Image 1 (cartoon, rainbow, N blue to C red):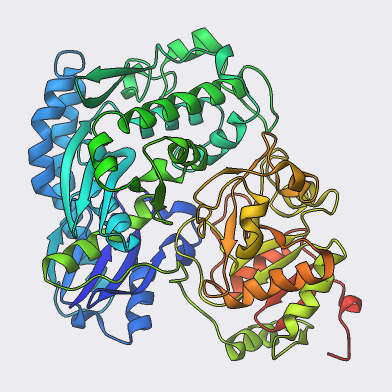
Image 2: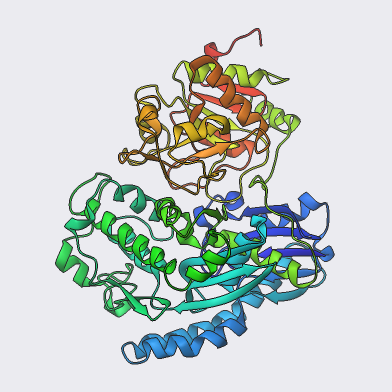
Length: 582
């Protein structure tokens, strides 16, 4: 069965994913084609077209469209939402009813418009999948685990903000839902806006800033409160201050109310680290962690015990690597599988595999996240020739030696190889790479190349053989979805890749996962004794990760990068740095 998952342009991060007979063929975010970060309110035309091209089929060959939003869930959740909001926010309740009815029409039109633009003569059968079910399906079905506790946490889907469940023998059982306005995702986004970042984009900056702060110096209990409902998980958002309606907000554009300004002062501006903002970030982070950890002692406790400590998580909050580390430290949790595209861009894939299961297809586990476009050497060469760009050609693995020498010398190199990553993290195919012990590498990447805040941390990509020695854990981390403490003996050896609290967000690389990137790390280790490279996404501030060779060239010439490896071809801004013998 050919099933195309389509994300909604109604908000942010639309994407497409193609699953054929239970196997993932392709998955990609629309932003990579439109070049508008998050592609807010855009139809996933480019993403869907790529998926079809990857499979070599036309739009009319699609059997089912899976959409990660369900009218049935909307109708089911509405009474729970109204009970929570009617007494205190009747205007919000009426607005929600009106808006959701509009969404019913818009979402069907989105699917029809997408297929019309793809040249289809018809719109296939549409299967609507509950938003949070799509999230947990993207994690559970693709983890390869038979049994696991399930958790999805984000802003909102239909009216649900949190889904807690269990997967047994390939079937998902719902244990509990938590409804708007009690949303951990919206709480964290509200704090993100107060800290001067963009919501649905800057939450990872709030997380990074939190490491510099002291949560005891700022109280957020008046915004979010951990409660308990017997053995069920519970918390409460004080929504007169958080995720406010337009008339309640400090300004029409911001989610927070004036009480935050009264208590904490003006919202943060600029790129610096100052008080009280770092403490606000730390306190918000701790509140998120404490509430999510409480799920393991309430609703999920029995499921975790029955499933031998295995936990599958998704939803936008699952990209919070510090929260994931705290979950791993919980005594009931032994292992976690995080969907690498845990945010809304992952829901088309989750919806597609959920429908694949329903029609009887066996869903294959997700073994990598390299599901986007690939450009062969001929295509790369044509792009370079079109712009008459001097370069050298290093076939048969020679590019690995050339780039290794540059990295050993302390250079920063853009690395463009193979299929593009699905999800927000660069995993060695659309990356900027640096030497983790060369002084000033992180400052140079932040300041001269990515043009972002100087305090932002970087990921260390490391060879799997030494990972347990470098990190205080042996837990897998192929997708940069966890933060781990770096062992003290290694902090001085890779200082440019260690955050202020001694942690790092690693990618543990095996030869099977990414052969070429693995060989580059091993070659660097042969010359330096350090099997680690700094790895950050190949893009500039405010732009999506690059997709095509042309995107990479634009980023290269529009930043302080000096070297770019496009497949087997090496470009230098100073052509004198290219060896004419190559």
